[in-house]
Length: 415
Image (cartoon, rainbow, N blue to C red; front, side):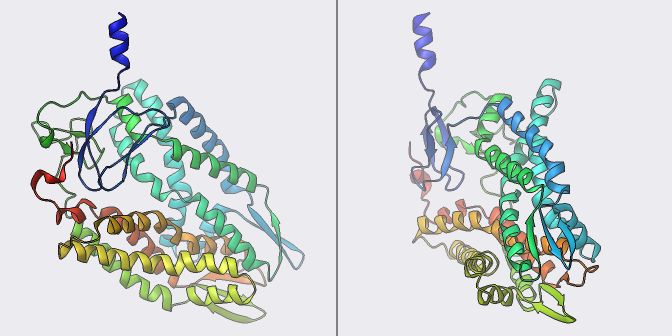
């Protein structure tokens, strides 16, 4: 019995392929404080820190309980000519849709309501679905892709920007729902940090160590499992077909990037916001809005808006064009630099939604029924579409194509 106990505690070493460069290496069992990185490209392969499912369920329930207050009650309020006007998240989305742009309103609604709600409900589904014998694989696959679309933290920055813009015309007060929104944002952030998808796969669908030559092992592009396809060519864990590379990765990335470039032209030339004040109509493009903030003394806020709405979108376009051209011309120089650039645009891309969140709040605070009114310009739709398309372009690009020009047979694999 002692021998069995000691051997059971020896970490089990398994083979794993990197999802970013396709390198094959041996991965030992990780402790809670350990994180595994690819020896070739330094990509994070797996984290040892695990938050138990009961804790995730507790956080998910907390998020659902906070949502009605955070979404429907006032986040901030202003007092204009003796009249109090409240701004809530749902009211801003409703005003956007009411003024004839339901598509842009849907973008804001998905990033601030749909994605966080799906995150919380999915965790509860894993708990109850496992007890009822339901299929959990689609939910586990979705959770891995959901984190880039939860943008409650960016909306919080949007509140600060909207407050500074409105303070020129009225007094700003903190709404009763701000505490609930802050707590919900904190709980959602903690949930995403502690959500270990690989651990959940192992808990619900454990797999034996695959047999055969290590060089025959493939990476499942859906669930990141390294193994051998079944007789139908599917992943033995999630049953998604195991392909060597993402299907039509370059074509989809080029299509999304070109469409984003086309949308960015009217997004920057047309007005994104229109303010009616003292009988005058003031139109602002993205850049003129930044200049207006800077000249009014709000240089730090102007810098944030400039980075999120101007610098980030154009940086993403330039980086993605560089990566795509390097793949087509099979460039072998600067491989690690290019993969770092791809990680950078993956991380910063979501912050471009800041301008749409500011517009949503401004429309809730200053509507057409007041002496001071604010409406959304035609550039908002084009800008929101460009942001979504650039996020999709980054997501659809298979980073392993960057390394294929450098690959020579099995020399790319390290045991």
